[in-house]
Length: 224
Image 1: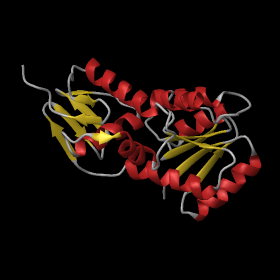
Image 2: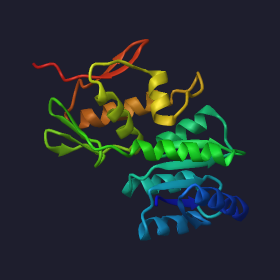
Image 3: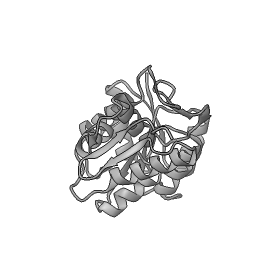
Image 4: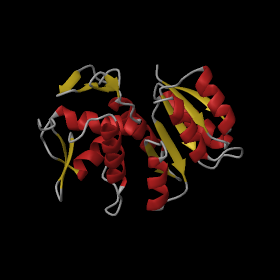
């Protein structure tokens, strides 16, 4: 049974989600505040975190950042904010997905299933000196680990399934979030830039290519 940590200060919402997710086969651990949520996370690491932004003791964005420092668990944020800027900030700060209040529990359940499905798999993909261990969710370049956020890893794992293929923005959005994002959203660009930066910091230059106006591809670095 997959465990979900629900960090939500509204007891009515928490109770509803515990019932809905429990009926769907999940074990739900509820924490009513940010600090108690961080404690629960350390005591019993979950498979996924559902995080409300409007917490009484600690801003939800800060909770997401603290979780991401020491854990790679997927984080779905519950937010009343619907601006593109706020969403980009959330995703850049450690969240893997968001859902805007009010929402239907069935939509949240679909988002949960997408995130958990992305964490499954068992192959290892090797492209040049770059190794992607899908089941362990680890990446190595020349034997040294490259630490990625969950979304960065999912982006890399998508690209490495077909090296050389140019994936469109829509294909990436559908794989990472299970839907197309707003037309003016630059969330994909943010994750691509972060992934490229981390690969470069590890010495893996030239693997992630941008095909202007088309999309992104992963290719073995040209030999010098």
